[in-house]
Image 1 (cartoon, rainbow, N blue to C red):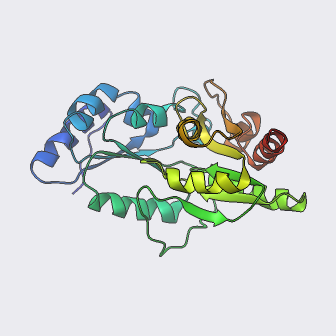
Image 2: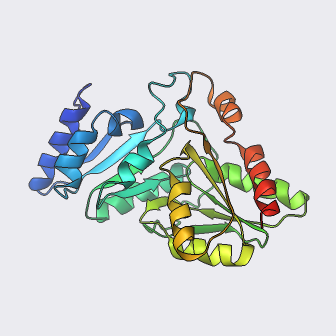
Length: 265
């Protein structure tokens, strides 16, 4: 069933929470900015605190929303959602993975946040690849550096790995689609081998994937880390390509971060 709630996102979250009481599994859908920032109180009280089985699906996340500008480009939503107790946080990399994650969330009981973007990106995840919540995916094995990416930056990380190989640098690339619960085992296993790590995400470096990984490393294996992320600023209007270039969220930025972190080993 489909319900059009209109421009009333707080009401949408309240309705979704209510539907779970009758045994329904509601999936909400709107821009990431309006899925989180605008309705954070309703999510905290009616969904997370009440442990309701609501799936918050957030499109148009990050800078690649593009021309709509800073008021619509949320770069703090991962941090907002991962801090809520019991909230599962997923950030998918392409169409196939987003579809698989949606199906997996229907079978997963509990509040969840599914974040995805607007632009067309290569659809490189196999259509039949199972989506396991909380389990990272190894995309490229390497020995010199670990690159951990999420969302749109996964594809950029793969391109960066090819460029690094031409420079004689062997990069291990891991797709972290589930930011919470985080696959700490996969991260620690990789950095034990490579001795350094670069994290890449279309999000503020504060509160995002990189910060979560820093916590894991601080408690288990202190490792040099570089962040490819937005440096504590709002976005602006522009094409996705222009913004990814200006805010240094592309494959070249990952290559440069790798070169910096290797010097710190």
